[in-house]
Length: 385
Image (cartoon, rainbow, N blue to C red):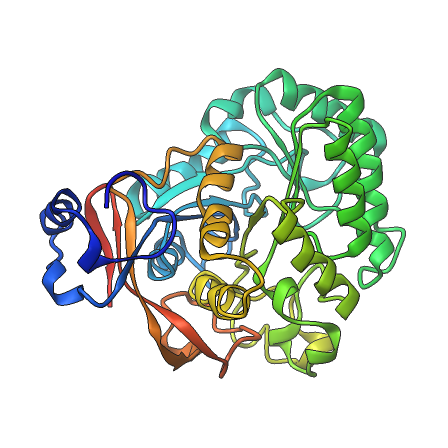
């Protein structure tokens, strides 16, 4: 089996060059002949919480969780303390990444200072060290500020990554998402800035993105495993079902499934957002927004989408590797980056086994297929079950 591995391929079918490569990384292929090999995944929406909130997650624990989920690259969000709105503030994060990260970790800088939506951050200084710019967690409400941010992001040769949330509408409403997206797409057309929308959750947003792509705008989007596999009817009075944006209706889930099939949705990201057990134990209304997802993403997607015949394994892997790498300029999924999987033995999702500090997942207790046995980054084993 030569070249890049896109679909799951049995290790027994690999050519000698691949087996030699695995042996050089410390693996023993003859032990895994009944298992499958996949490229290392890339998650473009991860909250590592450090610096500033390491009681929720650290760069070490978050990247260990990423490796346990088959991810060899992640893009991290800027809602930290200090917010990476200047090179000095960004450096605090870069230093910890250099020391502790177990997989490729690519930070986003903030669009505005302090993510306050009022003054554009020092985009030019940070651009060489970031994968893009975002105020994830909040929407930039001021049209003029967002226009200036897009202009400067474009001039810096980077990409604007938008959390679309119009605060004039209830957070739970579909209007909060698609109305700010509508504004942003007009600004993207005006400025020519490359634009990526985070965690699409509504049918209206997908219709706008589909139209923007037809018009030739440089626009991409991601959705998340929970929006593809759950509806509002599945949610319980429990913090493990609370995230932002909230899970929507069946019509939205169906529209998202169509979008991953026809290419409107470019990639799937987890929005891995860990919190402490106490912060997620206050019922649905009182709990913090956010769930973890790095260690469940591929099993949930493979079980619900591929095994159910909604998309092919090739399409799922493309959305987790080539599409995010291409959009964010990440040199990933090379021959020295791969993961080994048991795709045939069912098991139950148990949050207590997670390497992440976060334990809150709507998939707790779900039976899935797809257990990561080993992940290799740069020819070195970074996770082994």
